[in-house]
Length: 429
Image 1 (cartoon, one colour):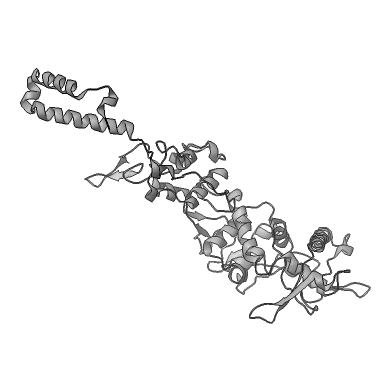
Image 2 (tube, rainbow, N blue to C red; image 1 turned 135 degrees about the vertical axis):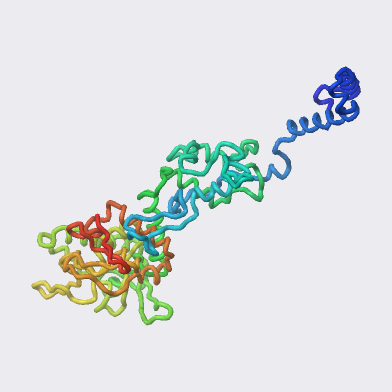
């Protein structure tokens, strides 16, 4: 690096500096002209370095801080790393708290350190302000850099994704750069409204993804399996063997049949859902729409599961529990002798979507008023192997979604149909 680039000739500058020092008694008493000259040039060299050595170079040019993934709306992205969900017990039970990687945790780790935007402890053990202002820790602190709902126009998002290394935060260091997953969490949080506490828009995408990915896999709760038993039982005219496949579940004697004709499958499942909804809207006026297909016996090729392939499937399962709309025993025989495996009321249920997931809850049959005593939660164990935090996310969705009717949250009179087995506390509206 040449000092001449600054318009300075070394010999002339040295001569001028020495003359200046010789005329100043104060400096001559403290330091020799030679030492002063050396200090001067050292400072000048450092200044030149600071001006010329920007954060660029061969390695820096290969470092990309931009977010290149497609944002995942199903990722649960809270501000705090511990969230008590709606419906939780007074003293939160094991499935009442979501523990997750949070925005605050990420910011504390990368920005709120004692050497940067976090508090520091002085020699007296007292907390002082940040080494570098402003302090970034609380929700209010972070929101100064966020445009809720718009990551692209938020200063926080710009700082953590910009490739202008002179603006990047945290300062560029390949060993302390935000992981892609951390950027995704921040993006999702801002996109969902940058709320201090999660709401339906946070819970629902994550919960539906957990249910679909856990239950719809393994040839279980999907439309192909549900409609397959109807096809194999001869309930669907025009179906050939080429339209179905049959298999036995590993480690079990249960045999399943799947309808592989996608056109027929979609047509059948839509028709079935429509008939269920119409029948239960008015069981007397719409008696002819009573669903007569069954997922279980007396068919020889069985499927005891109903589809949970998407949000509409899941909501239908919440409104009309499978045990009511398709059972393994005859519930009604019409005047012509035709047998039906369907309850007259969809409220006569001893299990629900939420109790099949959360084993800490008991349910009261909304129709009979009788409490169940057996443990449930089998869907979480058998289908999804869900963690307590994942169960809590599903619970958070269940009790915030307006499409889950109040009767399946709090009963007919709002006094509660769910209670915690440990405390007997009711979940009330």
